[in-house]
Length: 424
Image (cartoon, rainbow, N blue to C red):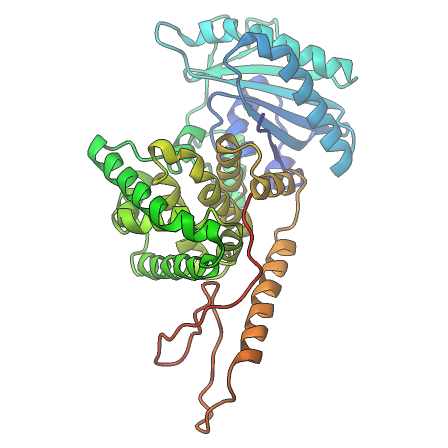
């Protein structure tokens, strides 16, 4: 079960007073940073004034038989996580968000999810933390499971406020907080390509060919460092290519242009190369500064090429996409990417550690510092092995994560040495 807990640090939107179920429903996308469709969301409240604390999100389990256990786990996770990071909550707000199935309307969804709402209220109550409000949001309307007053919460539901017109929207705009669209839209940017069967078939053929060539070299050990250098060198070329083609337009259009910048063979070689842990860890060093934006686009594009039988290979590029987003402060995008990585491979250690760090409010600078030290140590070892400087005094320059020495007027490359390994 992949849970997402939002950080609980105070922000501008936490200073807004919300007085009604309508204002709570309108506030949800701003609390999360996106519209959490097909989700159960729990928000902790602290103090006499009910200040917003940690937020926890989980996809609604399709089987009602799972709901009692899930309700207990969610309540325990939110309460214990809040105690570790801030204090025990005084109350909890529950949101159930789901679009109608064919033949349903929003009111049908509300009634179908009513048992889950009750199980969540019971689970929180057993921990002595009351659910102060429980809302169902569906088909552009909301319903309260707690308010019996039909004057404010009629049986047919209440329409949500128009986007951008609520008190929370004004506060979020003032604070520079943006809603990224729906969770479904964000996940679509990382999902495998499904544009057409020929496109998918061609990419899968390229992956088959790369597997036949690279896997024996990686597993054999003799060529592992060489494959690492080749993979990182290819990633560097893509980073340069993406930097020369800035993203613009809507997400589908921008992503389609990014896809066109990567050949099937290039994507396949990178996907297979990233299955080596050392290569993936070195790739994580592209995580800040001017390289970060291009790196995030590259990892998204590579994740989209993990098609067909290679879907489980997406854990590595998804985790790298989550790490770059986390490193640059884009927490909603980070949690979405890391959540998808863990759905792809629940035991993928790097994703688990990053996901835990995001849930616990870990400062990404701690990991950035470690990665910088790794790079600096590699560069120092490389300098020790290099011959003395030429009489001309030509500078050797810095070294990038792919091991390429960056020199003035040259693209000469050197591959650094590092302990190799495989796994998650």
